[in-house]
Image 1 (tube, one colour):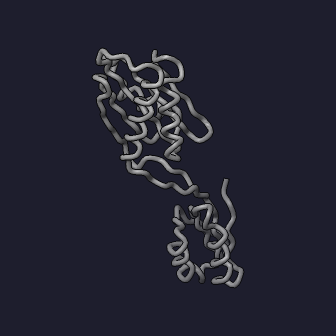
Image 2: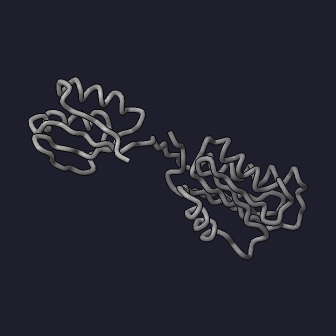
Image 3: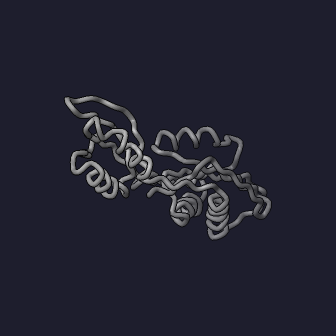
Length: 195
């Protein structure tokens, strides 16, 4: 299961006269992350720090802050909330008071964490596409099993004496769905993965 953001989120906080503005959004690939960064980056700000995590890929930038004090704490906030396919950008407007390395890490990480804490989280379950072959006579009787097991019909084709539905099924439900189909069709319905 993938935990990501349901919609973009934002949060703002003043820390020792510096203003920190955080933006977070779902990003399913590096191009989406780059486009989001470009859309919220403020060239007039002192720093635009960012981090993203997309599956096994992650990157971060301190954007001129001392190494390890900005981008890494933002990435840790993403990981600490158990999120994936997420980009977070924290923009800092310097207020004249230096925060020191520890203060910067706490500020960037804290603002990112608070933004993510307030964000609406979406749980996405991995799905697979399958061909479901069944006798024409069983189609009306087996269709309710799709709904019962959360499967979605994407298309329909025909073969001699059989109908073929292209379906999308949550991977954690495939085994139970297949068993129910087999039981309801006396072994006539067949589910096979599509590439």
